[in-house]
Length: 408
Image (cartoon, rainbow, N blue to C red):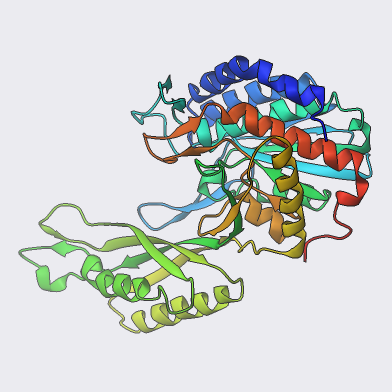
């Protein structure tokens, strides 16, 4: 089967696409840098308006956070970009990406460079400004397909994927329920391997309150929240492995101040990963039981905040069929497509929970994401744009390739 000309011609755009990734990566869009995220939304919207039927920039919902004093407050988040083409078509594809990175405005990692080994190093080049670039290039190319009118597509770019997609969750669910197949642009592994099944994830914070006192004159009147928290940390850490594939990572502990003051407050935040949605209730029961026992001591009080934001994404028959199509398209391009289960999670978990079969690592090949060593493989930019354009083309010319029902 010959490669359509409009897909082959994407190789001519390589330098233009690299320049776009660099331009976008030079815009700091850390998850809480609202100005930077609005800038990215404008850049992406401008690009989409050149070939989409309609483009909207929508407000995210606010996210609940626990401040340093243990109070629950709300945090404003960046915008959501939604673009559509042929929204009335009988078959719909949802393409999802995120504009935010893990690098705040004051982070030292703020610039890009191309090295002799064919890597582009820079903040968010793989995760996922390179992915968004490949996505939009694929869509532009697909608009030259003779079968383009057979399907419609929606692009959804959010600003809070790196912090759990709390503010964009309702948009993800809404558009997932309108679509038949989902395509997401998280980076693949350096060798091109995709993520298949994914674990679910939840973030939690426990705040322990005791009583401050002078560490010398009235030490006996104090109630040390840090000391009280210590056994809780060990007990929660020990939950790892109690159920197969369950991991608990205590990622942050904060408390105390001047060394001559008995600390009256301590906070501990942790992340949970699990492979089975049914295990969520087990974990929550264990946490509540630990806090109930802890709170039997009237000198201290512990409260729990947070929850599961991303359910597990299992490998289903529908997802296997989508990978088979992707593998066939890969072979046409000279690519070998493999996938592995992973403990990581992304918006693909959210879409799967809404019933939408999706592949979520269609972005560029890259590695060292979330660090100042992040890179993307330069040649993968065109490679992945061609792969997505070909998938869309094959879906459009062959209606039978779409799933007959939604993911169970």
